[in-house]
Amino acid sequence: MKSSAQDGADQPIITFIIPAYNMADHLDTCLDSLLSRHDDDLEILVVDDGSTDDTARVVESYHAHHPRTVHLIRQQNKGHGGAVNTGLSQAHGLYIKVIDADDWVDADSLTLVLTQLRNQVRIQEPVDMIVTNYVYEKEGRRHKRVINFRSVMASDRILDWDQVGRFGMAQYMIMHALIFRTQVLRKAATHLPEHTYYVDFIYSYQPLPFVHSLIYLDTDFYRYHTGRQGQSVQTSVMVSRVDQLLRVNGLMVQATPEPGQVPYGLYQYMIHYLSINCVITSVFLILSRNPTNYANKNALWEGLKLHSSTISRDVRSTLLCRLINIPGRTGRMAIRLGYRVAEAAVGFN
Image 1 (cartoon, rainbow, N blue to C red):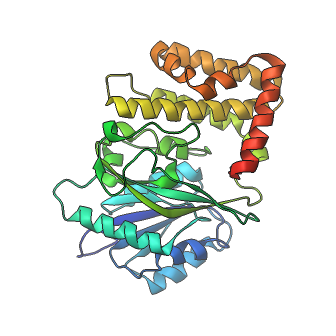
Image 2 (tube, rainbow, N blue to C red; image 1 turned 90 degrees about the horizontal axis):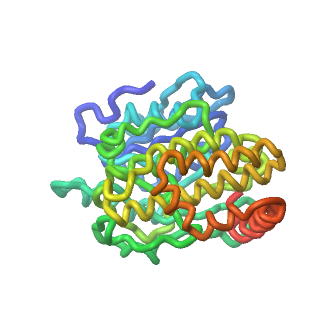
């Protein structure tokens, strides 16, 4: 049920791609938030990734009321990455934003974002990436953790990478914070592995060398729903899928440029982000309490060194990476304690 999104009309300013697998109970909130301003220059592609519930029916009902905006794409199950790939291949918007089907956006922030995007349409060289804040909407928690970037980027200004400051220890731009210019993703040949979880790390990392300009909007745009039973970011689920974290980490290592190949500010940020992913992967290898995974952790760090001694040195020099490599049982106990403290403070799972 997908044809050209804007037959005979102007290009949409943005395509929202929503991968959806058995998300009939959550899509209303997501779609209502995107349609809250009744704008007709948007494209919303819901990729039904082989759902067995009423996901398709829900989308069809929205398409009936918003035939120029909401579109259903049905496919056999390929996983989150495969659904994003399908959306990327069929997107018509000047910009692309991926939104998980159980998340939503803030209506007032949406107005600000769309205003900025419409400004970009009118200039000769639109900015390559737009960064916004995101909020951990954890079930049962009254205080919601907001991740912002005002300490590292001036708001409402076109920036290059050397105008971006140093990110905090646990501060990084995940998929939920990013809106990419469609041309950037296509130049980067962004293609995510199928049937693999945690590919959002790759999505928010691999295209960065093709980003030459960015704007930060200091607004709490994306609402990241966490704490739902069975989510892929639930601790027990991540432990059970630690092999997929390892696969994603390997792909991120392969996508990391050597110093001098990209602006210094970008290299610094990519080392920062890669170090965080190495730490996250190492943490869940440790949380598994499986001696084989302890060996896999050591292999991760040895593999990084074999790939590039320079990148390995720079990643290992960060504080988190020095802590994660405290050897032996004492180091593992410290990591488990640190994880419990961090999860309680942030509520990310």
